[in-house]
Each structure stands twice: as C-alpha cells, then as structure tokens.
Image (cartoon, rainbow, N blue to C red; front, side, top):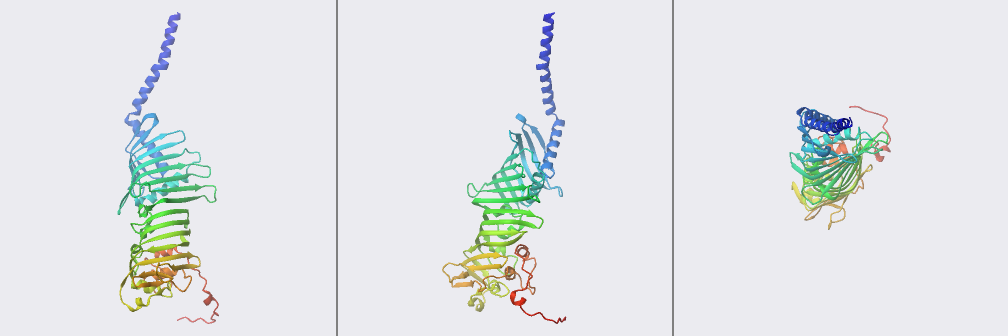
Length: 432
C-alpha cells in the first residue's frame, strides 16, 4: 500500500512540476509564434506608440526577443491629415531595465519640414500629458537622416531621454553630427513646469563646443532661411512659448550669414558673407525688444540705392560719402563692413567699427569710407525697415518684403515726439 501511494505521489509531482509546465511553455511558445498573436501584439504596440506620440503609427511586424525584449520592424509615423510619412525607421528594439524603458532606433529618416510638427506632437502628448509616475524612457538613434529639397544632413547619433519629476517632465536630446568637425554636437531640452501658473514649457538649445549648421532646420523655422545655407550657430537659445509668441534670450555667434539672401526680396543689394556676434538678445511675445552685438563682413557688393537710402533722414540718417552722390556707379564693391548695434525700446543705435578708417566708419572700399554712422545717437527701430523697404509714401512701409522685420522689431510708440507734443494744438480742423 505504501509503495502504491508513493508511486502515485511521484506521478503527481512529475505531472505538476514537469509535465504541466512543459505543456504550458510549449503551448505559449506555439501561441506566441502564431500569426494571430503577432497581429494582436502589433496592434497593441501601434496603439501604445500612437497614444504617446499623438500621431498615427504603422508597423510591419512585432517580434519578441530574449529576456522580454521587443523588436518593432518597419516603423512609420504618419501625418493624420495627408497620410504622408513624417518619420520612419528600419526597426526599433525595446527592453526594460531596472528604472524604465530603453530603446535602440536604427537608421531613422525624417523630412526637415515635418520636424516641427513631430516635435510639437511629442511635446503635447509626451510631456504635457505624461503621468508623473510613468517610468522614464531613454533611447539611442543611429545614422539619423534629415532630408530637405536642399539636400540631406546626417547625425551619427541622437541620445534621448524622457525624465519624469514632481515639477514636471523633461525631454532631452543630444545630437552628434556625422560630418564636419569631429565631436560637433548640440543639445535640446524641453522642460515642462507644472508648478507655475499657468504651466509652461521652456525650450533650451545649446551648441557650445562647436558651431552647428543652421540648415539642420531650414523648413521647420522659415525665418532661418534668411541667414543662408552656409550659416552656422554657436551659442545658447532659451525661450518659453505663449499664445502670442516666443519669449526668452539668445546669445552666440552666427557665422557665414549670407547678406545677399537677407536682401534678395528687397530693392537694394548688399552681398557678402558676414559673422554676427550676438552678445545678448531678448524676445517678448515674438518681438525682439533688446539686442546687442557686432556684424562684420570682409567684402562684397552694395548698391548705390542702398547707400543713398541709408542717408535719408526718414531712415537711418547715415553720412554718405560725397563721391557716392557724384558718381553714377550702380554697384560698389566694398572691402569692410563693421558695425556695433544696440536695439532697445528707445530705438536702434549703430556705430561704425571699420579698422584703419576714420572713427564711425561702417562701410569702406579701397578709397575710404562709404558710410559713417549717423549724428543722431539713436534712431527708431522702424528706420531700418524704411531703409530696406521699396520706395513708399506710407510712414511705415509694411509689405511682403518687410513682413519678417516688422513682425520681430519693437513696435514704435504712439506718443508724438517731444517737438510735436510741445506745439500748441490747432483749434480748427479742415477736411479736403
């Protein structure tokens, strides 16, 4: 009787500890490899990614790997309006570590024109709606390609992290260029402050060690097109967004600014490449209210009409060389352009800094000064617009050519100047 009982007990132990787990694991392995399970898993990951990105996501396949890793193949993020591909990657490998999720993204591609839409959606859904107790996410993208009609830019690596804290989430991107100066990299961080009222997001872009091509985002930020395809930036930008525009500060060096591109829609010509040292600039609601720096160019061409317009008292009121008035050359080749500028609510101050020339020289050719700074210490900011605008009878020439400048310069005061304000008011009004 004891032997029968023992054998029965051994059979039960064998069935419970060996046979049943083997059957369960075999059944699970068969189910996991079945087309139905893979389809359910694909739909689950597609919905999860779409929820966090705020955009439709397409996946060709989802494959389970060792130790719970997941491989997403043929990832595509789609524009919900037009169905076009915003970004794509060959595959993404995701696994969980002790703190949160880790992802490896292989050869992602995106159109530069779509980056702003993609980043805005991630900001809206990944940061603003992120739960404070959600696990952190880190990722590494390799061989990143940004495409545009002007060509493509390759980033060898993009490290990313979504960090959650009590004050609010923070997204950090570390980007390394694949070409150019070895080790050239930039850092973008977006921090959501939920403790402020109302809650706000701060965007900070840093390129401190090396200059970064501005052409990385030419289509996402159209105003940067005015700086030219060769322009590079080294410095720090920190801004916050509101319903009426960006507010914050900018400082750094803008190298190889294309002056010809800057004036191509204007009636005057000013060509050459310049370097701008922007020591400080402050924006409020999308308008530049303060700026201080220096602009230097080592040569180019300037039109006679530009030189004469700068001397107009309604514009910048510069001192134009007498030979410019006497000679009828349409274009003048200059050798130096050097000017210190200071912009504030009081107006614009320009001071010439050409070396080896009389004090106050802004622009000079082989024979000497072409332009010298104005006797007026400060001129209204809109005087710059009047200088660059086509001939017009209106007081402030607003048009397609000057739209960008007018949208970003300080607004002039509606108060009359002191000389006008002190005049006695007329008691009679006549209409013609």
